[in-house]
Length: 71
Image 1 (tube, helix red, strand yellow):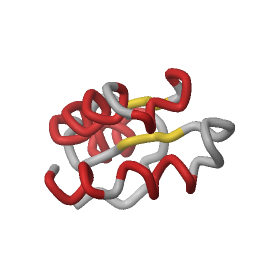
Image 2: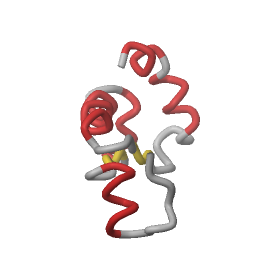
Image 3: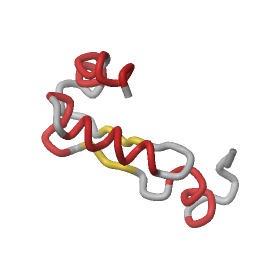
Image 4: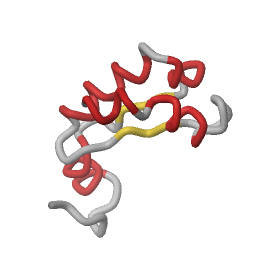
């Protein structure tokens, strides 16, 4: 999280100043929820275009794309 806090401006620039959505994902969806909350509380909120992928990679693999790698 410390590294993410230091790179918020860079992330906002990469998201084209709010014109592109940001999707946050991790293995099970726990760390990405925290990261999403942090981003929504900063300038990288992108007008609310920050989305946590609920359940993470494991849930995505189980419900959306079984060929998606799960670790």
